[in-house]
Image 1 (cartoon, rainbow, N blue to C red):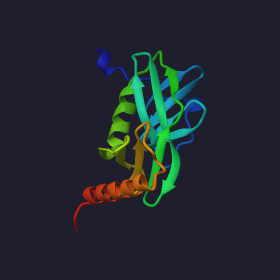
Image 2 (cartoon, one colour):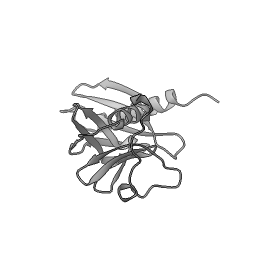
Image 3 (cartoon, rainbow, N blue to C red):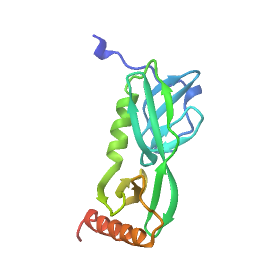
Image 4 (tube, rainbow, N blue to C red):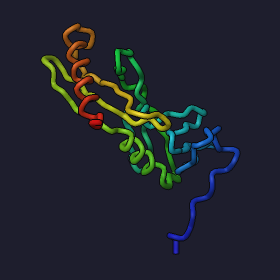
Length: 172
């Protein structure tokens, strides 16, 4: 009857400082610390929390969870330009439900996504849900080789984001 067994509760010494409405969904030991998934994001063993909307990629190899955080390169009117931050890997010998929760939560945070080829390169427009905030957070991520500072590209990107925001907003 292994299905009746519950995963051990997160020890108080490993519990991060959660916000009032934040709750633990899954966790896995990492050395003498823990990787903790909550309804707001992923707490790293160093004490930082990445919101689900701040994780660009998450990959599970069966032993290692690799997280690629999104970093803001530029703030523009109504959206931000994101780039990949350095990937962080965690060897999980007792992963439990953590990899599943990470995949599910990162995927659920994406409310809108579309890719647009440009004359040189391309751009992905993404609207993501942010726990505790109304509406979507808008960002773009350019393909490698895209001239991101070219005025025509900046103008077209703004138009694409505006169109996406209009498409994602329910009519009154």
